[in-house]
Length: 376
Image (cartoon, rainbow, N blue to C red; front, side, top):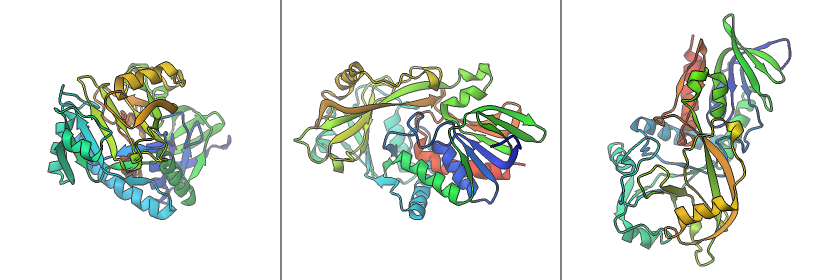
């Protein structure tokens, strides 16, 4: 970028899950597109890292998200075919409800029941059974006798870093320009275009997609910033108990066991035969991504084991191979936000995905690319 003010048809600011997908889809249109990121994606400072993300079709967060999840599965397979990368693994997935208290997730009460209802309505292949049968097929899970299990056959996991990398590589191949380690400091309407001032120079674009994750707050009026919570999340990799040798065949899984949103744990099959990744969720507002505590203490690990794992999950030991921090950008209703920026109708913002966005990101990027292409 130089002071000559290069001009693009569309600029995508933020190249995480949704930004990389949108840039790739735009790059197929023949228009001149630019992607900008303050870091060098894929990276470990946002919401799209940590080896794996669950993908599922009966999306209990909202019935209208199901079409995005289904289309994303199609797109991941297309991208795999183009790149030769393994992005999505179908393992099946189980959703467990302890049956003790009604629990909600991402703004949805009765999350288990809603997931099942959506699966039935949309003919998503599934099974329903109780805790006795669960222990026969997946003995690590010590679900209460009052519990119930939903198993979805087409659920699995995505590799977030590879998904981002693959789409950025395809975008470059299609002619998109990408600038990394460049922080966007200002977006300003200038005539019929938008001036983008970055830490290394300025460019102009006819249209802008702002997909900056939690850093979206830097571009909003102060009155709107509080609508987006930045919630620190901690991912843990626990060592496998030597007596359990089959964690690699397990499904992805989620388990709600109490009335609070935090009464929840989820995890994955082992990807290396040595550790199992699992995590809970937190909705404490850290205010801004720059304020996140990136250090995970031994006390946090011990609390996670005591409050979430002990007595519920067999086959792992209270020994942590590693723990990592990411974050959710969360709205009050846990819905995605897609709307024009204030006073800039040709600058579209997308955030927050409220902790359930990665599975939808390929199709959301396709939808946003179409919207930007049609925009006058």
